[in-house]
Amino acid sequence: MAELDWDRLSEIAHKVAREISLKWPIVEADDVRQEIMVHIVEQVEHVAKKAGDDEFIRRLAWRVAKAYASKEQNYRDLLDDQYYYTPDEVRNTLRSFIYTDEEVSTMLGKKDDLSKCRITDNITSARFDASAGLKKLTDQYREVIARLYIYGLPARNDGELRTGYRAVDALAIAMNSHIRTGR
Image 1 (cartoon, rainbow, N blue to C red):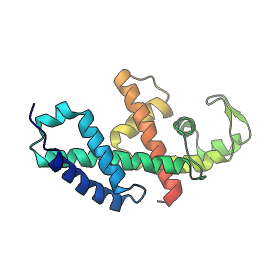
Image 2 (image 1 turned 90 degrees about the vertical axis):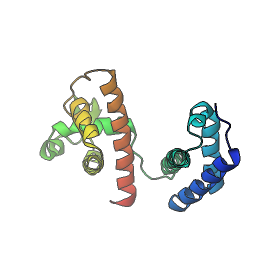
Image 3 (image 1 turned 90 degrees about the horizontal axis):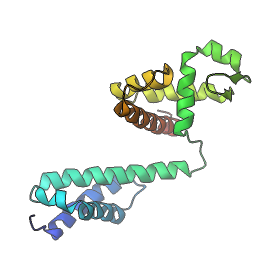
Image 4 (image 1 turned 135 degrees about the horizontal axis):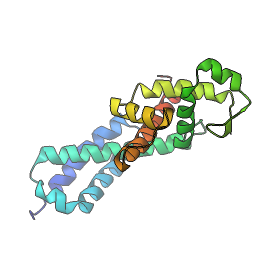
């Protein structure tokens, strides 16, 4: 295992942290740098193999920094007193996609046999936010969401099931972003 130049790694982490903190005002540069360095320490065996490659270290630092900033942003969004879609609510909304808007409007106030819940007028805005959020997802995520949650087909294997969970999480983030920015 190669000897690591911790000063050089810290310098790269510091530059990336500064750039991320300018793009994501929710995080402080020092906190981001610390996250990057903690990740490097935790993954020292893997990092040491490519420690001489500054571009690899920079890409690694960017990935860790963006993940940290995104996690902090999601946490703040959850606690900011604005409505926040959970993955379960997203799944229930997706199940409603088998109905037309007209069918949903006639069901308001009634209990739905499919989702086992009472249909409220919130379903209309949730369907709108989900439609907007689906446009932001990859084709693979849209396809697995359609198969598993809209059409209700069983997952082909564990991999597709896990992809479905990640797709719903991504859709929840997109829906929450849509209601905050209106984009």
